[in-house]
Amino acid sequence: MTDVARTAVVTGASGFVATELVSQLLHKGYTVRATVRSVKNAEKTAHLQALGQVFSGKLDLYEADLLKEGSFDDVVKGAYYVFHTASPFQIGVEDPENDLVKPAKEGTLNVLKSVAKSKDTIKRVVLTSSFAAMVKMEKGPADGKLYRDTDWNDESKADKEGGYLYSKTVAEKLAWEFCKEHGIDLVTINPTAVFGPVISQRGDATSVKQIKGIIEHTASYVSPWVCDLEDVGRAHVLAAEVPKAHGRYLVTWPKLMNGKEVIGVLAKRFPQYKFPEDVPESESKEYADVSKLEKELGMTITPWQTSFIDMATSLIAHGVAKPVQA
Ligand SMILES: NC(=O)c1ccc[n+]([C@@H]2O[C@H](COP(=O)([O-])OP(=O)(O)OC[C@H]3O[C@@H](n4cnc5c(N)ncnc54)[C@H](OP(=O)(O)O)[C@@H]3O)[C@@H](O)[C@H]2O)c1
Image 1 (cartoon, helix red, strand yellow):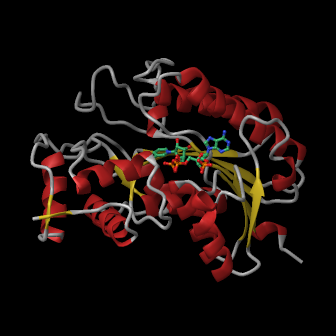
Image 2 (tube, helix red, strand yellow; image 1 turned 135 degrees about the horizontal axis):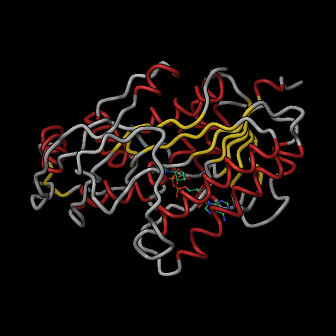
């Protein structure tokens, strides 16, 4: 019989962040119920099926859609932890209201409504929110502000530019309201742009596209704020397991990225390949306070160099990104 306290649900399990979380939970001995939109979609689920073969009997795939009420009832029934990561992550979409805000809000509400029906076993919900729900973009990243877990994004709107940031902000707010009203223990993880070693061969996640673009010379944008994929997975697991964990946890490398330095690190690791040169130099100053994460969850932030090198190495190894010879 499955031990309820070792049973975790991960929504949107086929995604970039969630796959790492599923893997970490399996390595820790959890039985994982992973939701995907279609079990039959091999392109999106092959890596989960492979993990299921390694951790035999420990990973079950369930079908669920954010936009279908009741879709998550079966999967959360009798579970102990629920990790809600599923939410569309795309920048610059034409119809942000329908493509981002609606699934983020309705999805969060649908998952939490299902949790409310199974409160007898569910100990805690960990929501994958984002730094997008904290950042104030109007002044830009380098305005001297030190971000911390109490910050809220009160600027973004449901337009082409800010649609994703807005969707994460309203979905997180909704989650706090619903959980307060229904007595559900909620913790949120708020990562900046996530980079690290990929497990799947999918190339469609926004984080993957950014590094793939740098490797293939089709883009040269480097996020000003970044964090490590394995740290994000670890933060989710600890946010569930550590009894005193509460509120929001900003996960990030605490200094702003200097794009030139990022390219320099990749070029040094892969001298046989060419990398874009048109990357602006910028000041790498401190902008975030991660002491809550360090003190309460006992975490140490992985240096950004590791995240970028691991991600590039895995994307090249999986054939997701094709490097340009020097
Ligand atoms: N990557 C980052 O830099 C970053 C930073 C901060 C926060 N986050 C958050 O982390 C979470 C995962 O993002 P990611 O980077 O891993 O992106 P991703 O790979 O695109 O994953 C998004 C996941 O959401 C699922 N999803 C989207 N619409 C859905 C729907 N209608 N019904 C069911 N599932 C749906 C996707 O399903 P399919 O697999 O079927 O497409 C996918 O599994 C999101 O909540 C995102 O906001 C990401």
